[in-house]
Image 1 (cartoon, rainbow, N blue to C red):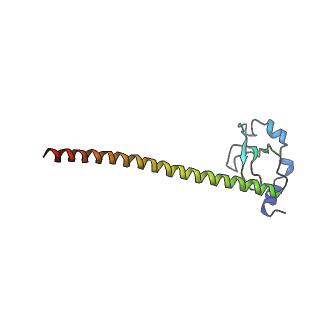
Image 2 (image 1 turned 60 degrees about the vertical axis):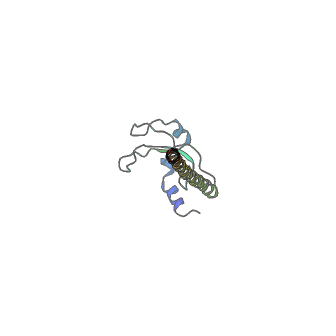
Image 3 (image 1 turned 135 degrees about the vertical axis):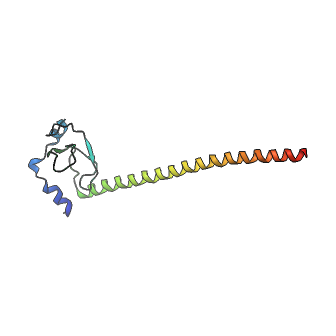
Length: 133
């Protein structure tokens, strides 16, 4: 049995839930606002698509909410899917950080090459000047 997550699932009355087909067919919420499919990445519903009222303020939004996908069969799969998503997100962030670091290194390398070219030209001028004297 799940501790707090079973509470959150059971606290939402099944009578208020839309069927999967009703959620798929819905184009507007009860506020008459257009709804688009979104993806939940909570531990209870990892990767599960849903449609909901686009108003985020709890006091102003309607109770329009419905899943487009069936619930994962067990806590094991929910936990596994959620953790794989989190690991993937962390790896993408690490890769992005390394790419940004690499871009910084490339720009530094370009500046250093410009400085080296400038120094070489100055040294060349000094050598030519010394040869003339």
